[in-house]
Image 1 (spheres, rainbow, N blue to C red):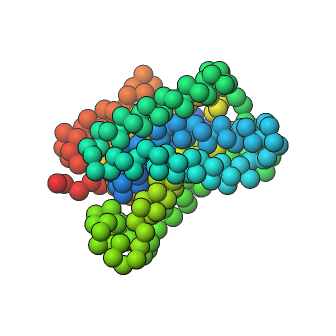
Image 2: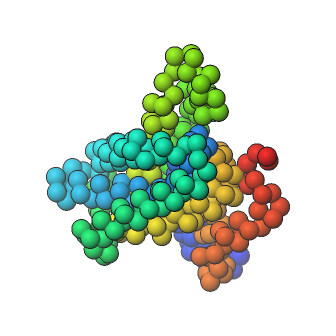
Image 3: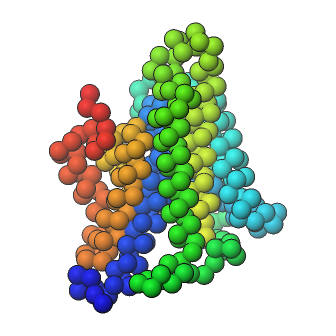
Length: 294
């Protein structure tokens, strides 16, 4: 059977690949949107934090024998703690300044982290095995679905929807949003706003690290894996609307599928289709698809 003149297995395979890429775009852009939307920081170090998550999982397995399931919890906690240190040492001094300062600082931090890991481990990639429980594939009748890729999509959707719910539908999320708009007023209610801001950046860093652990068995772990992805993720955030959590999730998944379909019908354009979409969206709606007009 063919779909648009293409064998259906090849068509569905590219659709699945696009969905997996979209899941990574959604998780990474979610962390960026949380940090920018609540703290006003353009966090260019997000790609490096994603790389740190993957490397943390690889080091845990290679040096200490800690398996994937424990790494899925421990690596985001470790990178989240590193994010807290970054916020306390550097970013807290920049909140009242132009966002450009935060961008330049995090860009410099990303270069330093990548440089350290290139010095320690070289530029070549490290392999990370697929956990035994998720090895193999399931035959759905119309296509063969790799179990691990299905797991990645399911976890990404659960994490994205859970984060959106916490920020948009709970009292904690209301405190976070209020604290970033009027910190003095929120503090009069006995809420420690600096602590809340610090933990928010740590949570955003942990989200990036979780995406890195999920990616480790699919791609080779290397120091440049974050910088290769971060520009596309920034484009996703711009299309969805800077700071829009729902926009980053929906746009990330949708652009992954668009990218996958472009590989089917016009592979030469698959590397630039996200940026073409970004330009078209900005021409029509400068605040992004889900952003609020000033």
